Image (cartoon, rainbow, N blue to C red; front, side):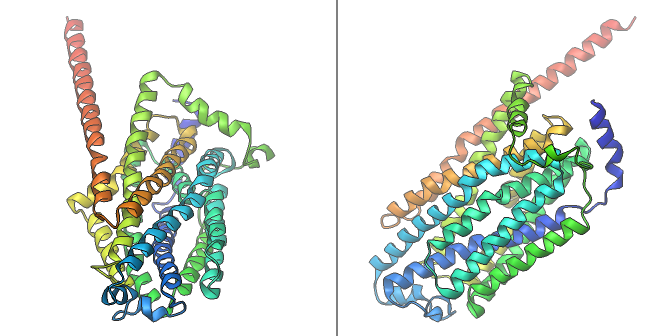
Amino acid sequence: MSTSTEKYLQHKVKYPCITVEPVVLVFFISYSMIVTLRAEYITLRIADGLDGTKGSRSAVLGPDDTLCRHLSNQSQEALYAETQSRASYWLLLLNLFQVVPSLVSAPLIGSWSDLGGRKRALVIPIIGYLMGSIVWIIVTYTDGKLWYLLLAEFCLGLTGDFSAVLAVCNAYLADITTERERTFRLILVGITIEVGTGASQILVGYWVVQQGFGVPFWFVVATMLASLVYITVLLKETRGKSGGLENLELFNNRLLDDIYGMFMRYSSKQRRQMMFFMIVLGVHMTILYTAFLLILLYVLSPPLCWTPITVGYYVASALLLGSAAGICGSFRFLVSPAVRSRLSKLVDEEEQGAMFSLASSIESIGHLIGPLIFNLMYGITTGIYQGFTFLVMASFYVPICFMTGYYQLTSYWISKHKTVSTSDGERMATP
């Protein structure tokens, strides 16, 4: 064990039981609200433009007189299909502007947190969400062009998006916990995300129906400001003071060298393990994120015609039941923290930020590839069979199940063989 690692372990007891969990809770409440609001708002604006009812909020959001039912009653199936298709393409475009910049910025921010400190790194994506929410507020109140929303999404991606928040928070927990404690704390973070996401959906549904889209985004602004205050005033730094001005440089060659060297300095066996877990994480997040977006589009359209309130209850029940230990739901939200915990144990303490940022970037790639493939597929097949895309997504889990089973079996037999060899050696050494 290195000297720096021993130093970290000696100082773990100085940190309180609750550290970054409030930041994770508040941030993902806001993040989940933005994802839902984005799908509902884009669908509303597209339908307004096609149907000529722009400005009639009650036509879309009223609990008894939704635009969805209006389209069904008027037998305007072609208009409905066109709305769904265009909305899926717009969501894809917004996702590209959000995810592509984060593929570069999130690894750099996460790796930089090993040098410049966790608190400084955590502030960057919070400021990005604050700026992006302000742009959304301006567009929703002025009925501005949808193209302006690309600027909001670009702000989120340029400052690291949720990937940077998750990477830095996980690295923070790795700093203050032992390997034995780490998996449990990361799973608690996963549960915090699920609970925050589920609770926010009920609230946002009522807000949209009663007061439109502006008020929820004002709530996001307030939560980001509260997070900045918490990080600045209450959160303790785990990386100590900066060693110099060079640690404050966000973009430098050392950060890229750290990420590259993290792979090259380990054995081929460890690299294979890293690649395996990253593939599992990437495929899982590709399906999980895209399925959520497409489900929103599906339930807002005929024959279901759900209102935002119903959508909120559905999302909340699905997430909260999962985090309360529903079997299928548990499998869903346990994958990411379990894989992250396993990856963190493959590298040294000084490389936790780089590893978690790399894992978050893998998730971001999933968020990019998933909508790119499945949103286009959904837009093409929605007039033929809407369930086709969901069947394709389910099929992607088949090879993942086989890969995971193979890894577990080989790991079991290797550990069993080592145990038997050790026992035989001890018996031979005994006089």
